[in-house]
Image (cartoon, rainbow, N blue to C red; front, top):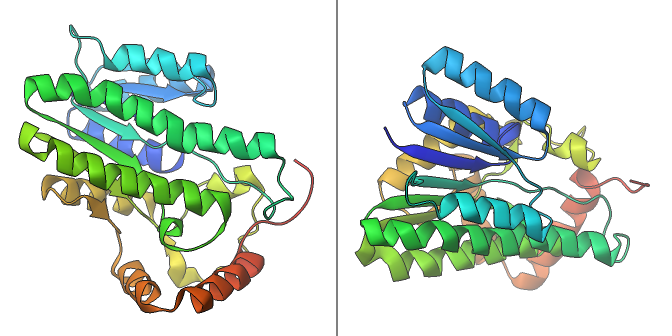
Length: 261
């Protein structure tokens, strides 16, 4: 039985990955900040699917938290065959409304943690000649919209480059780029969602199903819905100036509501 490690495992897309992988008979290492939620999740997945579910409490906005997950990924006796880098968060407020310390914390989680954990997982995978990494990004990576989009653009570029470098070694890497997904992500960030059209919302379980299909097909970028594929195709053809204005207006309409944390 293979082992998958999922960061940000207790909610949203991370929880959907954990459910699907447990159903597919993968043992799991569940990573998040909330030890109680991790314990409940691990017990439920073990009881329902008969798999082993270990828990690792770690805050990936800290060096200590990243190092703890790196250590688990480097264990030779209990190798991780699939890494899901899902941990992340959004900010409430436009550029200069968000404190620089909070922006740096986001970059720590979205970029540094992804780099370090991917590297910690990929090296032993390369030695074994097999393994996979899914780095959860966003369609925001393709739009000029603040630090969140910039950090996710880095995830996509990094993943595509690393995928090319490791393709001959049997290690698969893919960036997952969903649109709006029905999770508690926006609520936790204090982001307004009342005006987002219903057709733009995706189901987390279906996002995960599409992601695992595309990983099996050795794709390096997955946009897990035909509607968003069309939108992102159009975005790539639009002039950068017009796209920036559209992104800014969409951010004011659908994005963060200003206010204290």
